[in-house]
Image 1 (cartoon, rainbow, N blue to C red):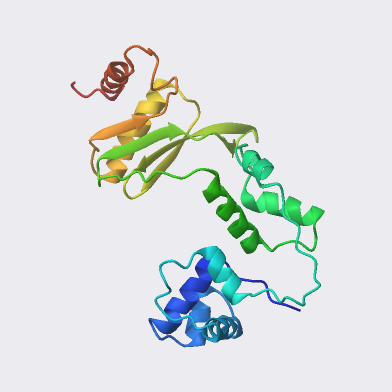
Image 2 (image 1 turned 135 degrees about the vertical axis):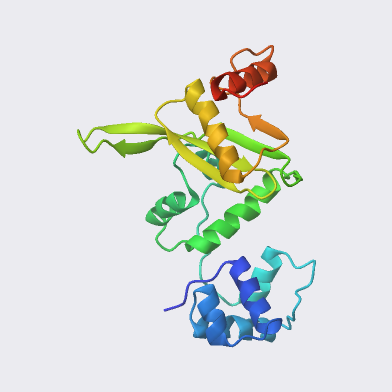
Length: 241
């Protein structure tokens, strides 16, 4: 039975640990969560096609995959089925939908299709062509992004057994992605501002800029959202403006 192929990122890590750090196959397998035999297989594949570390800068994921797994011209095996990437990309925008869930549905329809790691590799390769991404540099301590998560968290009341939805307040530092999360019963102004106060205490400081989304608790007057936001914060927190 053929072993499941690793993701290209993990293959790169295997080669780095082998050729740069000179670790044993057993140590590499322990670090990457794979067997020493799998490490040996991928190292031998890389050596067979003349790869060395560091890998060439112009060696992209698709080219690396083709070099490690060349397709035999005499092979009569039919190609693996691929999903409709555009429809899959649209499904990912729905709450609660993940790549793993879509892969499970894909394998139910195509039992002989790609494994999860290769499914993700193909999707990300397709998505990169769809729309180029812009790098957004952040300075440390400059911006804190705050919002309520789209999904609620079910909380069971111990006295009655009633299940109540809790709102998740999320604050994320732009540079480090350091995250603070707490649950609120509702998205009202005291909860919103209180979440900020406790987030600042958690981070141990206040950023230069707090970036909220256009939610009602944070922005009530479209013409003066910033002043309304600032006034509301000081009014609820009790701090002098």
